[in-house]
Every structure is written in structure tokens, then in C-alpha cells.
Length: 229
Length: 297
Image (cartoon, rainbow over all chains, first blue to last red):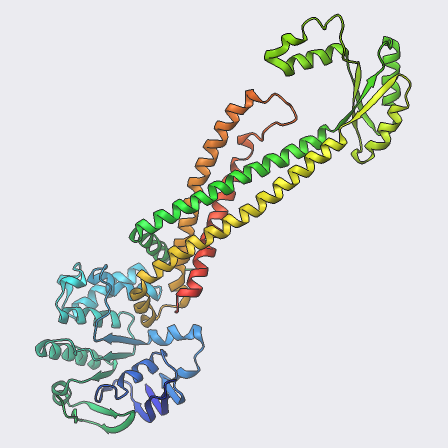
């Protein structure tokens, strides 16, 4: 589903964020990308989303060479990847329902499709009863659930989660990761960049560890493996 | 463009117009002012055009007949004038007609002409309409050689001057209209820049959810068009109201047939189309300009 082949990303200021990294993620896998701050985890996310281009090497997402995409093709790549961020990135002037339906409107879904899909997504993340609330009226955990529902609105085959639990209390963080685990169990490939040692150690999923831009470890039921402060 | 998408664009544009209420209203107002002035010049241009056409159509020469000519001589002169190639029509304008015309012209001060009935100083004349204006000079000479014709007045030079002035007014109006369009474009560009800025978070979300560039751009372009057309419609209302009022006031005041204003029923649809069209084009141009510069999608 996702292949990084000898990918190097060097920025104009000389920083090498990723140094000749290669890995392959199969369809339906759940993979943690771990590493200290500044190790290069977010660069992987940005490269997958075509926010940045690799300096060298190639990135394949569902058979598509991301670095070769032309500008008009980029949105279609992004539609195949649902993204969840640490800061949720919800629109504060729209209620929960609208935040999710927004993602469907963008891809031109009909009203009927939206009316069918959004309630089912909200039910999946356990927020059916809060559809009419604004993001500012939600707890952080609930906001992240809305963000998850939005990421899945267009049934993407891949879910990319960039530090999704970083701003959440431990119990809520576990609930969110459990929810992501359920989503993965339904067949969605999950790539989750995280600092959360407890979660990674507990979940016993594949771990790709990045340090100073290098891939230092790729384990099938791995642990976090770094010292945490 | 899908219907569902268009509905979305329109709702987003209207939402943005309302959200940036103060900015939207002030730019609608500014665009309205620009288009109002532009509309005034458009009306002036239309009238100048119409006056120029009227001048062209009414261009005539006048042959004055020597005093003391008999009625028979006057008729003969008329026949000889009509026999000339370039003459379309020659109408006798008698001494009495001339005096009546002057009375009408002086209106309130017509009593100054009292007593002239018995000693009318105005000569008999023929008003001659020509087939080909460019040959006016030759015709004037030919008419002048007819016995009994004292002199021939050729209004061509005056007409040329009037046409030259109207031409300059038209040119100046055109440049001013262009300038006002450019000003309006920049005003809308500035408003859209603020709209882009206030929606940058939303744009960011749209990008990573997979919105196409045009999906992000359309609402801003429509917002610009809404502002432009709103300003245009208000300006249309004001210009129409003003023009109708001016026509009412001026109608009785100016009695010269030559300068008849273009009647409102004949131009309202042109004005409306011009205001809506210009508003839309200015709005779209302004927002496109802003999007190119400030919307990195």
C-alpha cells in the first residue's frame, strides 16, 4: 500500500530530515512511526501528502508514484489518505455534523450520500448525540473523534495519524487508539506517528523507528524503544 | 461544475460575504461609487453619441435671399437649388418664420422683438439638407452662384468643431471609465485578500481533505462577483433615478431640437446589462488577482 524506496529529504537550509529510508507497508497493516522530536516522523507525513517532495528516491501510495504527480492530480492522492492531526484542525464555526460533511462536500458527494454517511460515522466514533455541538463545546477527546470521523468520511484506504494523542489525557488517548485499532480492523491501513510510549508498547503493532533521519528499527510486534522524558 | 458543488460554492460565498460583513459592505459601497461615476460617464457617452448622430443628420446649409426679391424669384431660387445634385431637400424659411423662431428663442424677452413685424430685418432663406456631407463645400459654392442668393451659411465648420469636442468627451469618458474599473478591481482584490486570510484555516483543511484548486478558488471568485454585481445593481438604481430626474428637469428647459437627450426607456436595458456585466467582470477579475497572489493551494 505504501512504499518508501531510498527516500532522502534535505531542506534548503541543509537539514537532512530523512536519509535514504526504505520501507513497505502492506494493505491493512497498523504501523507506528516512532522517534524523538525532530527525528523526521512529520516529514514522512508531509511526503505522503505531497506537501513536500523527496530530494531523491521514490514514494508509492497504492501503486501511484507520489513524487511524479502533477498538480491537478494531488487532490486525488489526498482523498485516498485520511489524516488526523494533534491539533484536530476542526472548523470552529461549524458544528460536528458539518465538520464531517464538509469533507464529503469537497469531493462532490451528493446530499443523499452525505445524509447517509455522516450519521454512521458519528455513530462509529460515539458522537451521534453531539452532532449539533460546535467544536468549542467538545472535550479534546471528542474533538479528536470528530477529526477521525472527518478523516474517514470519504472511505480512504489509508489513515494517517500525526501525533493524534499528544494533546489528550492518557485514558482518552487510549480510547482514541482503540478506535483507530477498530478502524484498522475494518481494513483501513493505519500509519500513526507518535511519541506515546505506553500506547506503542501496549498495542504490540509494527514499529518503524526513525532517529536523526535514519530508519533505525523496523519491528513486527515492536515497542517504543526510546527513552522518554 | 456539478449542481451540488455550485450550491456549496454559493453558500460559502454568501457565508463569507456575511462573515466579513463590514468589509463586504464597504467594498460594495466603494464599487458602487466607482460604477456610479462610471455609469454617469456611460450615460454622457451615450448622449454625446446620440447628439453627434443628430448633428450629422441635421447638418444643413442655409441660403439667404437678397432683400427685395419677389415671391416668384424666391420660388425660382428654390427650384434651382433643388436641381443641384447634392441637395436632398430645400425648405423655405420665410422672414416671418425667422422672426417667429427668434421670438421662441428669446421666450421671456420676446417683447424686444415687438414692432419688427412691419420692418422685419430677417431675410428669407432656404434650409438645405444635403445628400453627402463631405461635398458640402462644393454645394455651398454652387448655391452661392445662383442669382438672388445673397450669401450661404455653412454650419459644417461648427459641426466639425462640435463633433471634435464630442469625440474628445467620449475619449476622456472611456479612459476615466477604464480607470474606475481598475480601481474597483483593486478594491475587490483587497476584500478577497482579507477573506482568504480569514479562511486560511479552512483552506488548509480543504487541502488535506483533497479539495481541488478550483474547488477552493470558486467560492472566492463568486464572492468577488457577488460584491461586484451588488455594487453594480445599486449604482444602476442610483444612475437610473438620477437620469430620470435630470430628464424631467431638462426636458422643458432646453428647447433646442438638436440636443435631445436619449430617452430612459431606450437605454435602461443597456445600462442594466452594462452594470451587471461590469460588476461581474470587475468582481471576478479582482478576486482572481487576489487568489493568484494570496491563495497558495
